[in-house]
Structures are given as C-alpha cells and as structure tokens.
Amino acid sequence: MFSKACKYGIRSVIYITKQSQLGRKVGLKEIAKAVDSPEAFTAKILQKLCRSKIIKSEKGPTGGFFIDEDKLHSVCLSHVVSTIDGDTVYNDCGLGMKSCNPKKPCPVHNQFMVIRNNLKTMLETTTMHSLASGVKSGLTFLKR
Amino acid sequence: MFSKACKYGIRSVIYITKQSQLGRKVGLKEIAKAVDSPEAFTAKILQKLCRSKIIKSEKGPTGGFFIDEDKLHSVCLSHVVSTIDGDTVYNDCGLGMKSCNPKKPCPVHNQFMVIRNNLKTMLETTTMHSLASGVKSGLTFLKR
DNA sequence: ATAGTAAAAGACATTATTGTCCGCTACTAA
DNA sequence: TTAGTAGCGGACAATAATGTCTTTTACTAT
Image 1: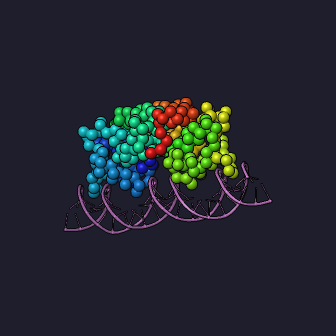
Image 2: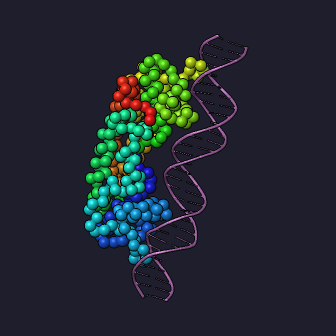
Image 3: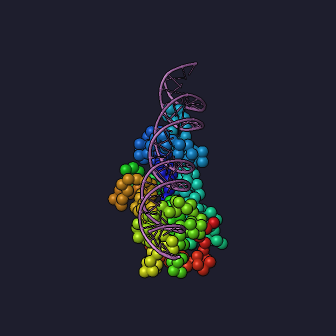
C-alpha cells in the first residue's frame, strides 16, 4: 500500500503530534526509538516532512521536531502520504497503464475507483490528532 | 497497491482469458505485445501462474498459454494477486508493524480494516471472465 | 526420426528502495 | 565567546525489485 518510508513517516508524525500536544519538542533519537524505525533513514523522512511544512524543527540543544499549535488539529494522513509517496495512490492506474482514464479505462478501472475513493476519503478525514489520541489513551500502539 | 509483476500478471491473465474463450492458445510474444509488458519478465510471471494452476501451458509448436474450459468462469483477481504478491495486501499492517492485531492494533488499524475488506471483497468477486468481457466489448483496454 | 517452435530455468544486469556514515551548519545555554 | 547539541545534506552501501539473456527441455507437425 505505502512505502516503508511513508509508514515510518506516519508513525513518526503521530508520535510528534502526541508530544506536541504536551508542549514537548522531540529529538530524532527519541522518535526513532518510540516508533521503532532506523534512525538515519527516519532523519531523511523527517527532513522531507519539514520541507513540506507538515512538521517544524529547531536546531541546537533543546531543539527537536514539533508541530505548530495551530496545525495540531488539521494535519491529516493524506498530507503525510502525499509528501512521502506522492500522488501515486490516488492517481496511478491499478494495472500500471500509462494513460488509463475514464475515456479509455483499464479493465479494473471502475472497481478500483470505488476502493481508491474510499481510501482517499479515509486519508483526508483522519487527523493525526485523533490517531495520537488513540495512542495516548492506550487503545493503539506505535511499535512492535 | 500491487507490484509491477502483479499488474503484468493480471493484464496477461485477462488477455489469456479472452483468447481462451475463443478456444485459442497464445504464445508469450503475443501476450507481451497485447498487454505491453517486457517479454522475458512476463515469462517469469506466467511460470508462477502456471505452477499455481491458474493458467496452463503447452510446449512445442501450436503450444502456448491458456485456461481450462471449466476454470474460465471461476478465476478471480484474488487468485492472481495472491499468487504473485502473496497475502501482504490482506494481512500486513498498514503501518508496517510486526505484530499489529485486533488486541494490539496500530493507530490506523480500524480505518485500514474497512478499506482492506472492501478491497478483498472486490478482488474475490471480480472474475477474470468479466474483465475479459469488458475488453472484448471495447469498453476497456489492456495497453497504453 | 528430425527440424522447428515454444515454454522452463538459471545466471546475470539494472534500477529503485532502503538504509548508513560523516562532515557541516545552526542554534542555545552557560 | 565557546562548547556542546541537534538537525541538514551529500556521498556511499546494502538489499530488493525489475528486467535480460542464454541454454535446456518438451512437444508437435511433417
């Protein structure tokens, strides 16, 4: 479904969200440990997410990654996914055909449309805030 | 969503189905041209599909790939997908966590369950026969 | 029988993804 | 000002996926 990079990214942003709700900035090491991801690789992913303004970072001691107060409730799964994996999940043909469109559809075009719209809606309506809440309340988990 | 190998596989099986409905066996070259896929790579995929009994092959001149009469209406997308990509689409955690299950779910477990069940149902109820019919009637296309 | 055709199988090549390492830059606190 | 911390960026390494090539095997029609 998603690349590993994207999965690490989502897990990381959930953790950052959770900590930002407590007013904490978190360092790379802490994030990698909390979500059980390779540290250096995670750094790359976080850099991408910074460039796309989903998260912010501050250098130096007491620095780390965080999410702005006013963004805490608006960041969605879809933002992270499109930053890391691009729009392939939404746009690419299910059978990998170059020009698959409603006028010249691939054999599974319509079937995939339904699934993909479901997925798109889910990604666009699921906020990182709500996912972080699940972790905070102990209903869901971020590692293992 | 699916690997390239899986996409080539699906396209190929649709084409083979279409031709088998006409009582024709089809050679590798013809398949690769019809579905616009790399020939040698497609050969590997067809071998897998043969080993899993989804399609059959006959060697020698007048040989080629085909689907048994009695299977023509029963082969589903799910069969091809699980042969080529395995069960990852159905079983693997959406966030790549090792032990994600209903008792210890990842943050997006429930959201993904819904989507995945939709997908699973779709794959299990969509026959290659029906997809081949769409191509035959000119409603859908297998290349470009 | 044998010549020709087509799939099977294994070795190899290329590319994309994943992952690591290290020096550099920015920043903060003392 | 400076020492230490933490993210940034580029180069590099390992692995997995994709794709190719060549030889062998099986078969059929003549």
